Length: 342
Image (cartoon, rainbow, N blue to C red; front, side, top):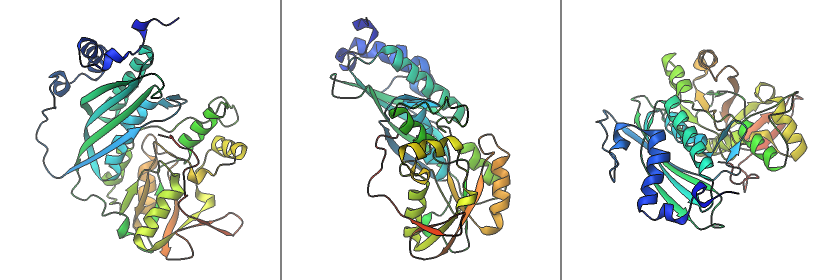
C-alpha cells in the first residue's frame, strides 16, 4: 500500500515547507542550472541579440506514460518544436505543473527526469516554473503548462500566407505515429509490441532538422508541426489562409505499417493523427530535392519525403491524389477524434 509520504498531498501545494521540499528534491535536482538555482520569483537571463520568439502550451495527454515517451518529454519537445518551426533557435523554457492529490512521487520524478533529458537533448534550459496541487478527483495525475523563448532567425519563414502555386510540400518523417500510439493504448492494444509493424510515439525535438535545412541553404516558406488534427489539418489551414490548394501524392506519404494497422482496427485516418516529432515544410520547388537530402542526412530525418505541391485554388483546401488515380478532398475536422492527444 502506498503511504502518504510516497504521494503528492495538498500540503505540497501550500507554498510552505513541503512545497519547498518537493521543488528542491524533484524539480531543482532534475533541472539544475544557474537561472533556476537562484530560486527567485523570476529567472534572470543573459542578453539575447536579435528578435525574440515566444510560445506557450499546455499538456494534458492521457495516458501520461505511453510507448515512446510521457507527458514530460512531450511538454519539452512540444514547446521546443513550436519555436523551431517558427524559425527560432530555442533557448529557455518555463514549466508549471498542476498535480493531483495522490499522484505517486515516483511518477512525478519519472516525469521530471524525462523533461530534463529532453531539455538537454534540445539544448535548452528550464529556468523557472510553478507547482500547484488539486484535490483527488479534480485532475488526472499531472498537467503541465510551458512557455518557451527563442532567438528568431533573420530569415525566419514568412508564413502560410506566402504559399504560392508551384511550391513543394515536404514532411520530415513518417506521420501519425503519436496519434496511433495514444489511440491504441487507450483501446487496450500494444502498438509497440507488434513484431510485424510495431510503432512508438515520434515524440522528439525537430530543431536539428530545421537547422539542417538552413545549413543546406534552404529557406522554408512555411513550417509547422502537425500535432492536433495531424497533417491534413495543418495543410488545410495553411491552404485556406493562402487561398490555394495543396495536392498530396498518396504514394509518397511516409506512413508506418503499424500506424496503418492501428487505423484499420480503430477506423481512423492517419492523415488526421497527431505527430510530436515531425514537421511540414513548404519550400521553393527548386529546393525540394536538396531539402529532402539534407533532412535524410540527419538523425530522425531518414524517411523525410516530398509529398506534394501547392496548386491554384481547387474544390478543397487539400486534394489527395490516390494510388489508383482518383482524388479525395481533405479539410479540417469539426472536432478531433482523439481528445487529449498532447
